Image 1 (cartoon, rainbow, N blue to C red):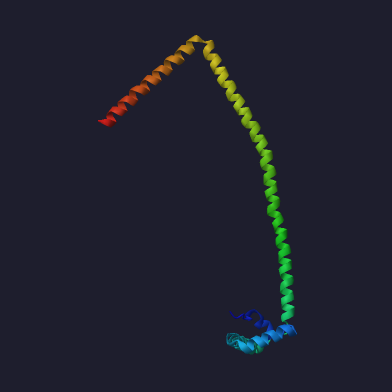
Image 2 (cartoon, rainbow, N blue to C red):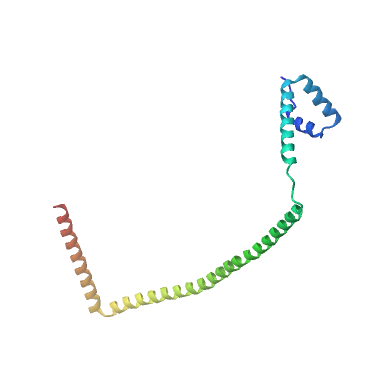
Length: 161
């Protein structure tokens, strides 16, 4: 199997090889037809590129415009970093407000729950303290349960018929 110097051909064309490497490439090119063809193609591409871009003339103020564009970009980047602080400060403020309001909300909720527990406790003691109210409550509950069972049974019978 023949070793081809495809990777070194570009460096050979540009004169970037040492004397020893250059001699190796030249001796290989004498014996390898595929590498000779590849070198000719690369030289053709190189001359085409040089010819095409050799006609292009850069404007005299190109360097100044490039440096100005880079300077403008740095200024915009600095300004954009400054604007990043505004949303960050707003977010931090909202988090602090959330925790402050959250503590107040938790206290209000805790107070509401304590009030509900006290009302249930008071209601149960009121019902147990007045026997007539306890009896009426039990009687009313039984009446509601009976009416519910009757209407449910009637509803189920009409659905199946």
